[in-house]
Image (tube, rainbow, N blue to C red; front, side, top):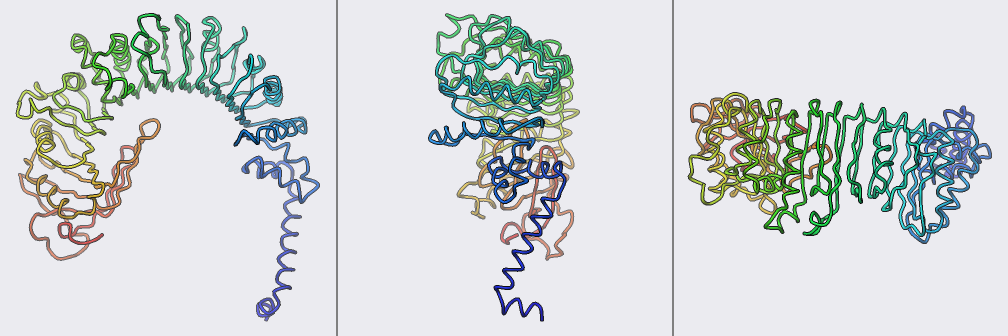
Length: 544
């Protein structure tokens, strides 16, 4: 009866809803201030300010929230943002700030911006993100920032000269990201990288060493370092300028990533604790220049030597191309005795490349080998038995998994696969990630590829070949994590004594005719873990 009366009298229903809303609002307002602030901390700052409208108690509560984010969306709204920040910090009394984010154009308001940063430091900020642009006149950050004892994370981005104070000590800073700044004073820059006693992660993106001659990055607890230089030097860069020598002391360093053209002369020192490493360079520069400067070649070689203790190594095809220009250095490439995983990304990797062969020869314990950009054989060595000869030791004892991206299956690709099947005698799995594009739903083409692949030699006993079909290859995201979500199906077949056999029929369907092929509805690879859900069908003529 009550439900019917509500349906028949919508006005009464509206009154009840309003009463419920008022009741909920009162209940929320009755919560302790600590709980309210915790709830509000999950909302964007502008939405938190709106909560002050319906409740007098909340009129100034928003100014005490632990997380504040101020971002300039459009130049026309800059004045509104500046006034908003002024009011938020003015209304704040003794409450601490956990996280503060500021993104705006400075223009002529450098003193105003510095007043905000100083106020945030006084409120014991823990995580600070500052992104400043469009400076008019001289600008320097407030000196109190560089001795902030409560700061645990600092992200600083500004296309400007970084002016540092004489006293620098981030006693609790664990994460530091610096983007697009130019270092100007050698002594003070050294003070910066020496005043980080508990730093764990350091990212230098798009920074310039300016006229610095040398600097040492030495933090006793640093385990992650990423350097990405965006500067593209001209052809005379190394002729008229001595690049900065950057010494990286890696007593605790676990991960190191470098991408650039050696605008600094980097050297890894005491890097025995390293477990993961990646080297990359600028594709456009390498592809557009027939001559690679010695500074780039020797710089990449020095970093590769510094990574000799890693367990996981990622190299771009451009780095391999750079090292290919210095055959005199190849005999001196160190042993990678701890290396378990080797990944090449970028363009097609020539299996006849001397650099590739040398690195494989010096990786005796390698278990996983992946070609994210695919592999090929140059026309003059397709039938050459000397490819990967002598056979790398890991092929005879440790290499169990090979992955390769490809845009199709042709004679060159098949011959390349035969090399691995014939020489990697302990190989267990080859995974082929096929990018089909507009041809992805062409079952005849898929059938053709399957027949070509099934004509390959048996290879090692119990070796599996897995094929994943994609309409596009996914992006490679930070720190090397690679996720794939196939939209069609995955083909898997096991080879025993040269014959292809069906292991089980989980669908309970009729027997397969013709070439026997496993088909899976879902194949998920997250990071380096493969999980397969098998659904067996007749060839490729039924939908999953």
